[in-house]
Image (cartoon, rainbow, N blue to C red):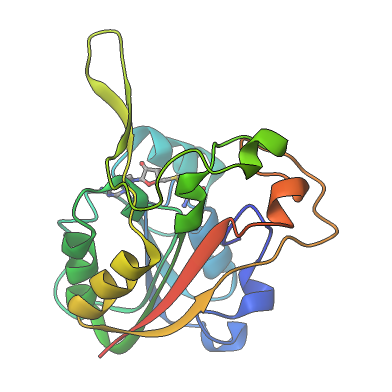
Amino acid sequence: MWCPEGLDEVEAELLGPAEELKGKEVLEIGAGAAQCSRWLAAQGARPVALDLSHRQLQHALRIGGSFPLVCADAGALPFADASFDLACSAYGALPFVADPRLVLGELRRVLRPGGRFVFSVTHPVRWAFPDEPGPEGLSVSASYFDRTPYVEQGEDGQAVYVEHHRTLGDRVRDIVASGFRLVDLVEPEWPSWNTSEWGGWSPLRGNLIPGTAVFVCERD
Ligand SMILES: C[S@@+](CC[C@H](N)C(=O)[O-])C[C@H]1O[C@@H](n2cnc3c(N)ncnc32)[C@H](O)[C@@H]1O
């Protein structure tokens, strides 16, 4: 599943046709509980699920799967050059790093020539709107161009959650500057079957403004 809209890889085939995934070495970054890697393994691919959070990987371990889990920073990948055929991420790592080019550069390094990296993030336009599922989430309340990160602090003043905004143009420039070709930019529409509300996600907002951007990149 790429996003809260419900676009799944069976339907989208952004990594290529499912029958061609068999035997492919795939790196998932910001894997969380490794849902995508679990699906990839079921298709016969050979995924590696990487996340910075040990806790997330413990969930992955508990749910199970016969693929490696790696605790590491996506900006310093512990793999040799040209180790993977494909890479993917559903809302993982990239929205949370100050320097996305570091991550993209690392992905380019570990992918084989022609390899794809497909990643989804919150659609940049959402930055300008309050993260509310109701009508209050439909009025612009901040500048789309303000790149000041969103930070939540703990009682001791330490940052406990940080999200970094990049405009659509920033993302395209980051991708191209890191040695990738942008093959597609998918903006999934809210499907009529999806009636769920979750955080700022809702059918009301989903029918009016994009919620997710999925970037399909190929290593030159
Ligand atoms: C919103 S969750 C997405 C998890 C999963 N892909 C999913 O679809 O449920 C973001 C994940 O990115 C991970 N993450 C954040 N910064 C990272 C980094 N620099 N390197 C690797 N993982 C990171 C977090 O630990 C978290 O598990």
